[in-house]
Length: 196
Image (cartoon, rainbow, N blue to C red):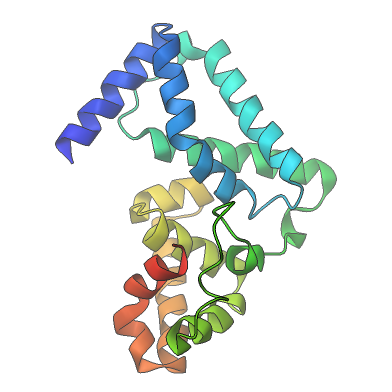
C-alpha cells in the first residue's frame, strides 16, 4: 500500500512537472475504470469519452497549479463525476439517469457478460436485487466493493457526508440481507464475481 501510494505520488509529481510519459501512463492506467464509471451517468458513449478527454485536457493545461495527489484514481473519479454532473445539470438529466446500467451494461468490451451466460443462481439473484436498488445505494456499493474506495473517498466522490455513505451502504446491505442471508456474508465476493 505504501509502495502504491509512493508510485502514485511520484507519477503525479512527474506529470505536474510536464512529463508526457507520466501523463500518458495516468491516462492509460485509469481510462477503462473512468469509462466504466462514466457510463453509469451518461448513456451516450461518445459523451463519456468526451468527458474523459476534456478532463485530461484540463489536467494537462492546469498541471502546474495542481496540488500533490497520492491517490490518482480517487482524484480522477471525483473530478469526472463532478464534470458529468455539470454536463447533466445543463441538460437537466442527472436525476433521470437510468442506473440499471450499473447492472446491465457489459463493462468489459469484447468479453462475454458472465452473469447472463452463467447458470449460477446466486449471481442471477444478486443481479435482480442489485437492479432494484436505488441509484445512490448501487453507486455506493459499486464504489466501495468494486472500486475499493474508502468511506471518506466515496463521500468526496458522491459529494455527500461520510454519515450518508455509511447509512447508504448499511441500507443497501440490509436490503440484500433481507433477500437472502447468503448475500450478507457473500456480498463482496459476489460483487467481485459479478464485475468480472
